[in-house]
Structure formats: structure tokens, C-alpha cells
Image 1 (cartoon, rainbow, N blue to C red):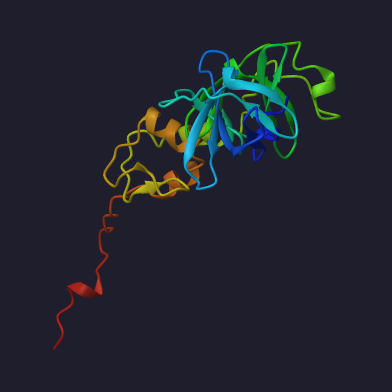
Image 2 (image 1 turned 60 degrees about the horizontal axis):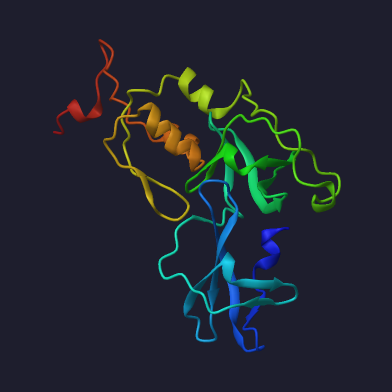
Length: 235
């Protein structure tokens, strides 16, 4: 089942009364299985349906009276950017599939379209993919045509931007201005010393190039015999 297909479906009571519609969903942090549907009623007030409350899923979702007041879990990763552990951008999460009790991320990019087991990734503002082997993958009938099996390992290209930055010896340098992500959330502030963890954060938010461009360079010392106009006295 493609979990994206649940979004915008109407939610009905067993008697046919319209309760609202699906806005998003939460996944189990343990295995990625669907746990809660995030819904909104006609007045756009949110409510949360646990999976156990669902009676049937078709053109509409029939649900019982059970509700969750304080749901926990991983918010839908659909649309989030996917990176390898070394900071290389792979693409985005196109969809989440449940197959035979397992959950897979459908990841698409410029040159890839693969499935990755849910357990092989870390979920933050972006999705960080770890090396992982899973030869089975979702059922063929549930996969979009011409898509590959899950990633058996995460490629570590030699020319990835994270390695290039290390080669340029950014570690220990100082930032001259703040860096924020696409939502305006601060990643680093002026005066911060560049550490491996700061490089990881910048890679996760696709801000490595910006990090390299905002290093504070000490002023160059004038060579012997050089003078500046500021040293001259006006008559």
C-alpha cells in the first residue's frame, strides 16, 4: 500500500457521517509501520486516528470512535531530501510503501529510483540513509514499473562535497556570518568554529557550499615596501 494514497481521503463514521479528511500520518519509530492518521474536521481542527480504529480503507476511510490525544511517532517523510552519511544528496522521498508487514521508502533522484527499508535511515529535518542490505523489497505488484530493488549499500562517491570540504581543510575555521536552512532555522551562528558535527548538519541541510563561502579570513599583511593611500596625509 502506498501511504501517499491516504492523503486527502475522506474519513467517515460507520454510519456514513463525514468526520473529516486525512492530512498526514505518523510512523512507528521501531519498524516504520503506519500507527496514526493525522486528520482535520470541517472546521480544520486536528484529530488523530490510531490504526486500530480503521475499519476499512477504500475511496473513503471508515473509522470507529477511538482517538489519540498525544500521538507519538515519526511524521511523514514524504518530500524530504535524502542524503548519504557522508553528505551526498541522493534525491527525495517520493512515497512510503507497506508490504508484507514491512515499510520501505521510495527514493527518487536525477539518476535513481530505489526502495530502501525504513530501518536503514535516520529521520531528522532530512533523511540520512545508512548502508543496508535487503534483497527482497516490496512486492512487485506494489512497486511502480521499472523501479529497482532496495539499495544494498550506500554509495560513497570520491568527489562528494563533504570530502571536498575536508580536503580544503575547513575544520577549525571560524564562520563570519549565520547560516540557516530553507525554513529559516539556524544551523550555525557567526563565530562558530567548524567541527565534524557542524559539517554533518550543513550536509543534511544542503548548506555545505554556503558553509565554505562564509569562512572568516584574516586580513592579509602588507608586503614590505607597500604603502596605502590611507597612510598619506592630505595637504
